[in-house]
Image (tube, rainbow, N blue to C red):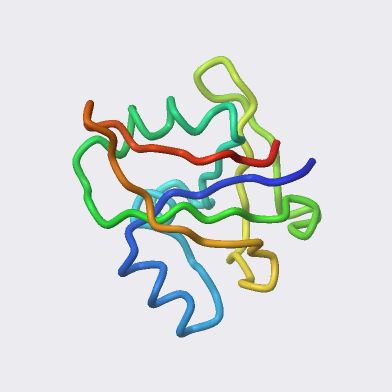
Length: 113
C-alpha cells in the first residue's frame, strides 16, 4: 500500500500533534471518515478542494499501519483511501508545510508512491 497523504490546515495539524491524535477536518467529520490521497491523486485533490486556503500542511502516512480501518473506495472514477478511525500520529511518516507556485497551485516535492 505504501504512503498516503492528507492535506490540512497547519493550525489543525498543530492541535492534533499536541493531542497525539488527528480526528480529521470538518469535511472528514461530515463524511464520517478521513479523506486521503495517493501521490498520483494529490494534484487533483488540491485543485478541487484547496485552492483558497493558505498555511497548509502535507502529512505522509504509512497506509499499512492503518490496518482494516483504511478502506479504498470509489470516488470520481478512482479508488481513494478513506480512514474510518482517528489517525494515530505513530503512523505519520512526516508532515511538511506546503507552498504555492507562481501559478497559485500547491507545490508537491518528490513523494513516495
